Image 1 (cartoon, one colour):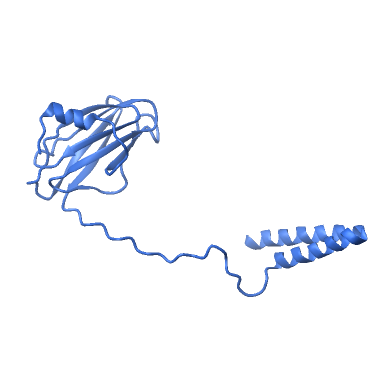
Image 2 (image 1 turned 45 degrees about the vertical axis):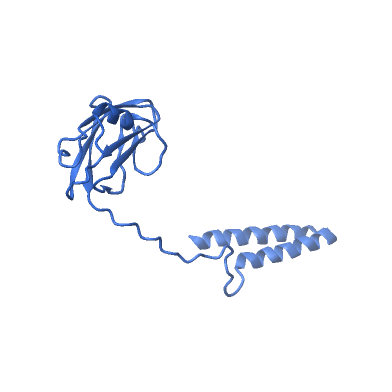
Length: 190
């Protein structure tokens, strides 16, 4: 469906949620910066390319233009003022052949400029995610008890005996054993 230009501009410049589409981040890594999506931008013939511009800083003026998309879409040029989030919908004709076109995104009245390649192809259906083996929530004990656990047990026994006998030697010995066990475990990891 080809919309007249004024209606197309109203649809494309509106704000919207972050639903399906490709997200372009503005002002995220610096003033007037443009961070493109990491994945390949692909669109099927007969559908629309939905670009979600998410602004992470001060309001910004961007220009989206293309010079080689005449075979795929009627879109040519769009000026947008992005405060928080704006959505641009670029319709792709049904009779489009497989190929690509480039979108040029300019921010801050020409301060930054980047190029995004849009592939027009039949997008394969997404594969179901592979089921990964779930790991147990609690670690499973293997072999002998860890030296730190043994030293903690000995320190607890000495401290418990100290509570009844009030012998200062047992109190000091329990804390020394506990500290030695912690230091041993710490240096064993390095």
